[in-house]
Amino acid sequence: MKKYILIFTSMSGNTEEMAEIISEAITEEGGDILVKDVLEADPSELEQYDGILLGAYTWGNGDLPYEFLDFYDEMDQLNLAGRKAAVFGSCDSFYPEFGAAVDTLMNKLQECGADVVLEGLKVQLDPIGEDVERCKQFGKVFLKKCTD
Image (cartoon, rainbow, N blue to C red; front, side, top):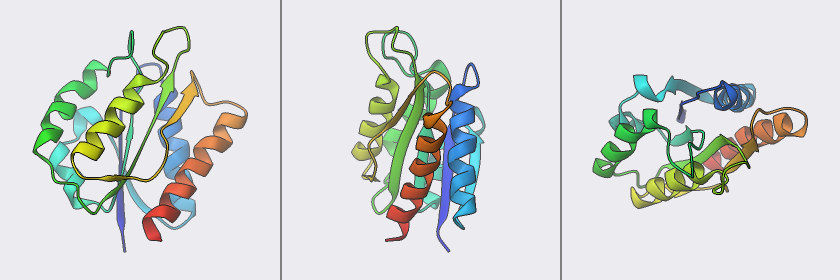
C-alpha cells in the first residue's frame, strides 16, 4: 500500500485546518497518511513516502514562514524522483504576493525531482464555505493522481 505524508505549519490555525480537511479526505478515500507539524519533521522523511503534501501560510511580502526555513534549506539534499507531490496554504490578499510560499515550496519539490501533480491550493485566510469543499477535492484528487 502506498504511503503519504503531509507536513505543514500554521500560525493562526488556518493552514492547520486545511491540513485536517485534506488529510481527512485522503483517509476517507482509503489513503494511509501521516500528518506532522514541520517543526517535528525531518526532510529526509519525505524520501520514505510515495506522496508528499506540504502546507504553509505565506508570511509578509511572499516569504516562507520562519518555521519552514530550515526544512526548506535541508530539502536540497533530497532525491524525490518517483514521488507525487502537492502544496497548499492559507494566504492573505492584503499582501502583494498572494500565496507565494505555496509557489516557493512547489518549485523546491520540483527541484528535488518530485512530480508536482496539482496546482497549488491557495485559500484566502480560513477555509470556509466553498473553500472547505476545495480542500476536500484537493485531497481526493491528489490521492487519485498518486494511484493512477
